[in-house]
Length: 422
Image 1 (tube, rainbow, N blue to C red):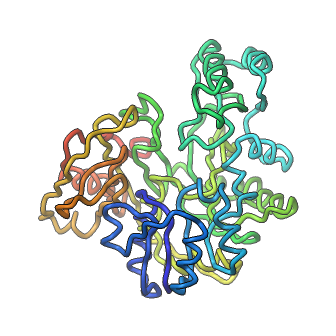
Image 2: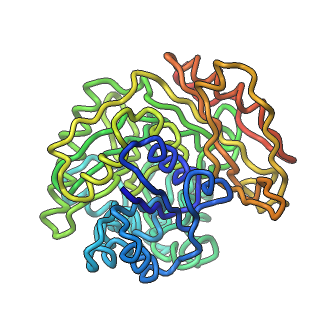
Image 3: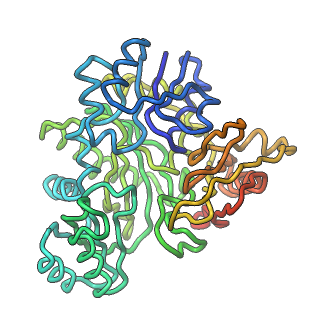
């Protein structure tokens, strides 16, 4: 198979790594890719959807996999499918589950999927009135796409009102925040659960746990994610069963009934409260950095999973995962998440431990290739060091041993990824 991966981050690099070791895959392309994806395949400088579709036709691409949410919301799947091309991801109408938090919350309410009490509004008076009816902390969300940063957990009524006012005025997130969701805060533990869907059937991947906060002990500002681990022992068979019965099945049924059959990755942000899974949000693509841990746990050919989901044939598939754990530690640039940092050369020591050599790897994200052929840290989240092991502790140890081998000016990372499980 010839496969094109759309995107440029660690998520897309990890998908590429899984495809690279897949015997079914003859050639890999990335659009645009990053400074390290050229080691896995060929980077393309094409961004226009029609030109990408032309490329796929001219080069007999068998499958396109869309990594980030923005092209999905912008309709790349609709365009490719209209031209008879096989592509993994939801249509623009189905991608509203992430593209609009208001659409998502109203969909959950229509189909009795458990979620927090909320209102959607573009009125500051309505927002203030609902905020006054809740106990702090209070959650305020911008309606549109904000790169994973459009959610404020306010610790007081005043802070919630300020967040709502800043969003509705356009000061915080521009047009993405001119309608908002205000909802009650749920006190429990958070999970990331991913279902690969073909419109009717689905495969649930091992549940992961992300670490959103910048600093150890879940302190500091929210980020795109500073690390993750999978599978998490915080999920048992009862929670998986409840997620299937109360969340995934009604969601796929409801989307189909409403004329938006869902195909692709349904990323379910879950808060478990007293043993009950409550839905925080849906996304329509893999989480980053959760994807970096899930891909190496996939034992079955990745191409088969993505292709059969894209062509409506998941009922015919048996998917296997390795009986192992994966821990991923994000190494970020100096000023992340506050502002961009100066490019810094990445130096990776020779790995002398066979244990680390065989059971860890780097997924590159915010990197570029210099004219000198060297890799430079140019993004906020630069790379993810992933360790695998028979236990979470073993996987964590290997991930951090690899972290110690990677150097660039201003690097920083959390030192406690997976602490909840340990």
